[in-house]
Length: 131
Image 1 (cartoon, helix red, strand yellow):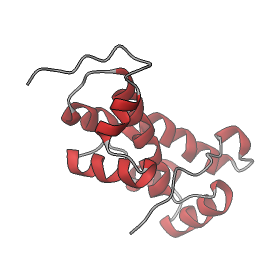
Image 2 (cartoon, helix red, strand yellow; image 1 turned 90 degrees about the vertical axis):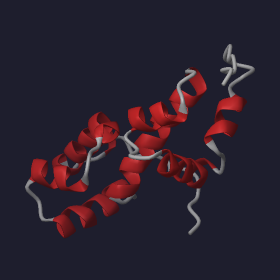
Image 3 (cartoon, one colour; image 1 turned 180 degrees about the vertical axis):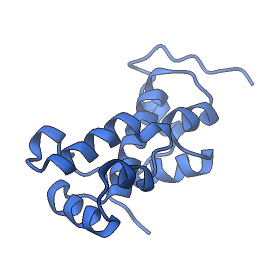
Image 4 (tube, helix red, strand yellow; image 1 turned 60 degrees about the vertical axis):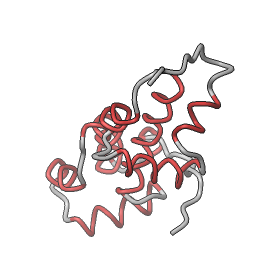
């Protein structure tokens, strides 16, 4: 399965529908805390299929993709700006495993976490950990 780069994000302020704007805000605030679609459904009270259709139409993305995108963006930020181990980056970004982090980064950015980290070396005083 091939996934393209991150889609252009629609911001909550660009959405006229208050329910979908609320969903986008929830994702923005909680994606890296283990947010599940079930949690969003409970917060909105909408049936799953209704919410998925509205979200796809107005946000041009699926709920799942939007959550993963937020997690991937957080992981990329941590990889570029910290010396955290991959397990810690995964945990702080909302991924259950390092493997899921690695697959998601490859699908969203076409790069491994280590490639993303190395790209930041000229811009960040990165010192490799001695293992």
